[in-house]
Amino acid sequence: MSAEAGTAMIEAAELAAGHDGRAELVLRLRYPNGASAELRLDEEAAALALDAAGVTHIDDLTGKPWDILAGHS
Image 1 (cartoon, rainbow, N blue to C red):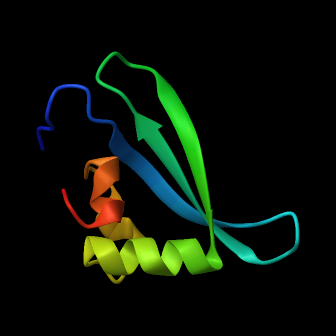
Image 2 (image 1 turned 135 degrees about the vertical axis):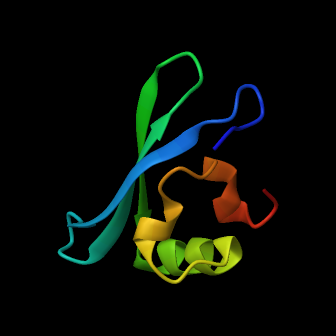
């Protein structure tokens, strides 16, 4: 699982309750320099991102570059 230099990888993906009680997709990203970040997507954005990535289960995101969510990875 190698990525282009500078590309953050999806380290973990899980569902969580958003502030409004609706489901959110929470991604933990890891950058090549070791830094990490959290990305939260609401239900609609998560559905579009999973479709663009061509995955049907969030577990399939782990280990992939984060930009797979835009459908051009």
